Image 1: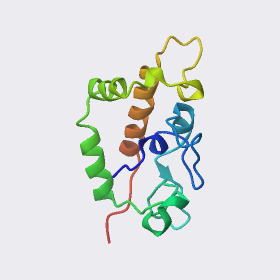
Image 2: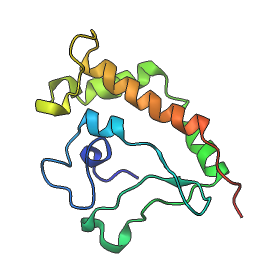
Image 3: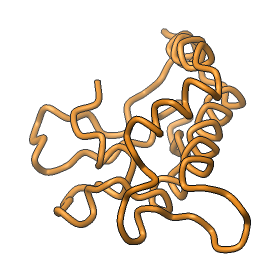
Image 4: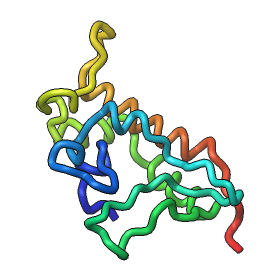
Length: 133
């Protein structure tokens, strides 16, 4: 479940502020889906805000079945669906660094948000996790 879309698609962290918890393409682009775990477990990269208190789960363990289930659901979205989501969210109207477009490459803000979303799906597709115990 996503509680705060701005923090999910941005720079939210343990001490998110009104500035860091907004949609920010560059911050979201820099985050990987999975965390390298010392214990060999497959862990999703998730920073829990202090506001979540004990209700949040940091870097949850993901089973192979869970990874595949999520991937199957995300692959049901075509690039056109993803584009429609970011168009409806009006990411092209965000102010400041949230837009995150790279100067001179001809991409629109929506193109870049779609590309980063699809890269997250690719990361889920190419990563493998251990079967559930």
